[in-house]
Image (cartoon, rainbow, N blue to C red):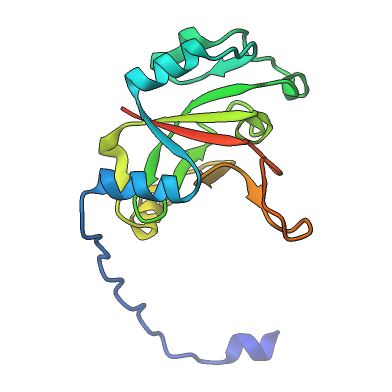
Length: 179
């Protein structure tokens, strides 16, 4: 170790990262990316109608404008969420290039919520869209977070006998409400 510490290495600056901008309207690009990921994008009124006409009996909404849709209070013990049908969360920001939405523990009292729920809804203001993951990682920066993830569609895998399975490791559906 002493010999390694004594090695003199010339310091080099990191290359500049170009500002990757997408051509087109961010909202349209984001919607296409979500749809390509097998998700659905809804407007507020569409979403309200969809939830009202559905027969969900276990709903948790942590999204400010839709808390009235909750059918029970979030339990302290996440083990009591095993029958959760619908979870409504607020996304911090979305990425137009791939439809990924950033969630961190500031919005997730239980990390299991986006995975254990049968159907996931993420509410996202249109102003919180960025072009690429480069800008997304700049927004995350050095902020302290014990947990964070990008969600880009419903859970899916084709590992099992090379057959596509939706909802294998998480929600069966993803709906994004653009506010």
